[in-house]
Amino acid sequence: MNIIEGLNLIDVTQLLTIAILCYVTTNAIKNTGKVSTQYMPFISMVLGLLFSILIAVVFHDSEMGKAIIAGLLVGGFTSGMFDGIQGFLNDGGTSE
Image 1 (tube, rainbow, N blue to C red):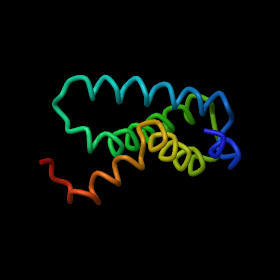
Image 2: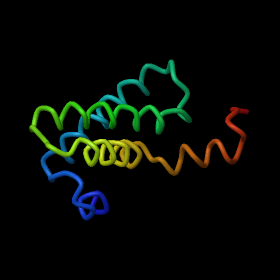
Image 3: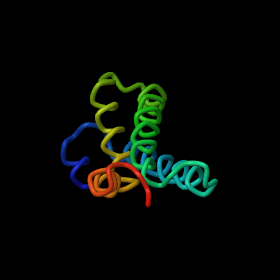
Image 4: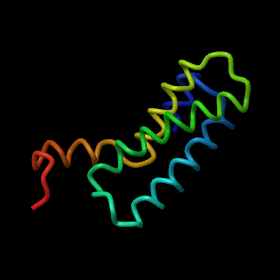
């Protein structure tokens, strides 16, 4: 998270709010068992995008583009974007 904070895209309060919302929502979806875990990083990125737009509106942020970029990054970092990409590269997106 220090990387995103260092980019000065959004303030710390917004960053933590998006991260907590992404983590809780992604884990709730993951625990249902209806979605394969290899798709969770991408779902988390979409959730980060949606939550960042919501947070930007609530906090009256004037730079929506920066909030959207931060939301995508937070969503990716929250769920382990590296693991999702490795899952597709290693087995071609199919489970054994």
